[in-house]
Image 1 (cartoon, rainbow, N blue to C red):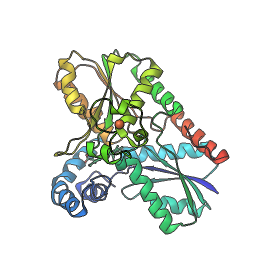
Image 2 (cartoon, rainbow, N blue to C red):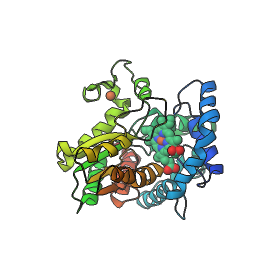
Image 3 (cartoon, rainbow, N blue to C red):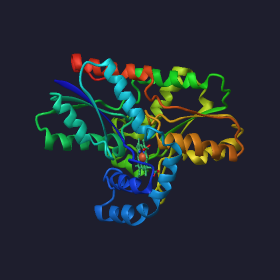
Length: 343
Ligand SMILES: C=CC1=C(C)c2cc3[nH]c(cc4nc(cc5[nH]c(cc1n2)c(C)c5CCC(=O)O)C(CCC(=O)O)=C4C)c(C)c3C=C
Ligand SMILES: [Fe+2]
Ligand SMILES: [Fe+2]
């Protein structure tokens, strides 16, 4: 029997340093997130980052935490429930890190008689620290626990026409009545090194200007290219003026070059360039989370207005909206009936 496994990143169990610490430990000790030799990752993560970050992160989580729990988890659960209403086959939700494990989700599917799984990583873009680590973890668990199960992975959907349509409609609806000077597409950052590491040609991704706009097989695994492609597709769909749209990358750890331009630097620069009314969309995430609700909706507005900006609008993620649920339900139905995956 066929079934679906949805996987997103995960959250700590509560917004306290006590619960944030083990969550960050699992997350940052992932070799695809902090990609240095194990002994060095131990020093960086356990000897340095985890000494101070859990307290700081817990404070940030406290600002966005809902009565029902972490927004990322609650939204993902609501999305799953809504998707179940539209589907005839079993659907389970797991998280790459934290207590809502992939193992339990696979067990749930197995208990319902599922032996053919469609894995849906809830990320529009490929990155070794998001999409790839989910695929690898699912394969490891499946091979060890359910060796007879067959897993098919839904590819990154960053330019899928149906995804672009619902994302664009979401943006258009949010912008109604907001006289924006500029729309910033802020994507989660990754270290530049990850782009080079994921380049199968070993020479295409130079991050030197035009590589992401020049056709290459490397784009199947180039996060930067895929982010730019999402922006260009939305721009074309909504016929947005080119000079009113730009990209940036948010959230970074120190002591490493990450993808640029950095979102927080853009918030400071824009008012000086005459941009007073700013809309920000965060398409690296399909569900609102710490990175969108705290870093963009709260901190971003503060940084922009401190620098002289005036109107500010954070556009929510697709979350459990009808249109988004319908798109994923169609992908599931197509796969269930014909085995076809979305283009
Ligand atoms: C080396 C560090 C990190 C990389 C690389 C990275 C890539 C990456 N992350 C997401 C999605 C999310 N990240 C979130 C939180 C978060 N991310 C990092 C670090 C890296 N992410 C940290 C340390 C944290 C925790 C919060 C903090 O301490 O600042 C979240 C939010 C989770 C939540 O509970 O709300 C998401 C979602 C992607 C898509 C990605 C690569 C493209
Ligand atoms: Fe992250
Ligand atoms: Fe590229």
